Length: 325
Image 1 (cartoon, helix red, strand yellow):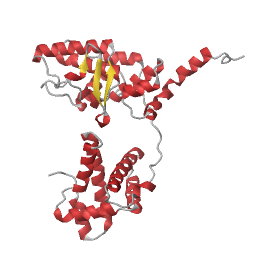
Image 2 (image 1 turned 135 degrees about the horizontal axis):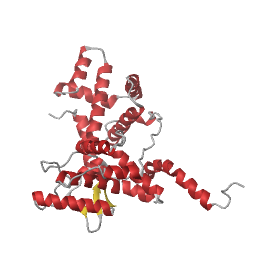
Image 3 (image 1 turned 90 degrees about the horizontal axis):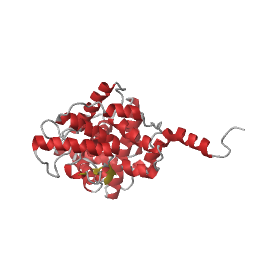
Image 4 (image 1 turned 180 degrees about the vertical axis):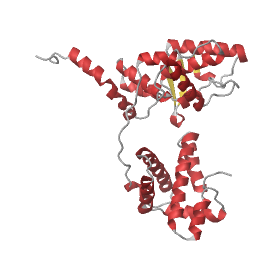
């Protein structure tokens, strides 16, 4: 049985089919809306019927669906504000509340466009201001220590070295790394075809060392298991099936420990370091935007704070009146 209410199911189908949202993002939206529906049902009345409706959210049947649909279609600003106030009272973080508001915005916009509601109550709901978290980056020397942590010439060791080299060489997300297929790798051209958020594809270049690590890994893989097909996963586990995002995170943690680096460093830190090191060495911001797969330049501009020292040095060297008199 599908865990979502039929109205939520229709919205998730729209996200997948028309907006090209990933399965993971759809699941997050579905959980957010299920929580929202449960709140509406619970707060609608203190009667036994309302309590039964709230319990039915997790396992809706024919008798409860119509009422839940009515509550979701009839929710006004007051009810939505009550839902958000409850989350704040329960100490949800501002980032989590902002994400749930984004879910409600998309949902109600879809309801309005589909003609299921006459007026969108989310137009007057503001997202709470939250401090912008600046990305953390590690030094080039720390990256080098991490990249050299995998040892041994066995298939799994060569795979791990290739994964780390690929992540730093391209700045790809963990989800993008594990989604790579053999056919996405173009070693002769030293580039990768990457499927990012919203199923958007981009081509990213590979550095020489990453390309070499991948070539050595694939050659060993072919010895062990024969020549792979283009649609076979690029990075596989010991059972020859696609490596998971969780496994990659565990591998990164393992090699951080071996390299004696901060265990708080994450795969996303490697992505941040990729962008920061490019900008520190003079890369164009829009080029970095394309490499990272950011749809908006504002997402990339967050990295510019990390390069202000380099810009200050360049200014002091180049401007005729930068030096003190």
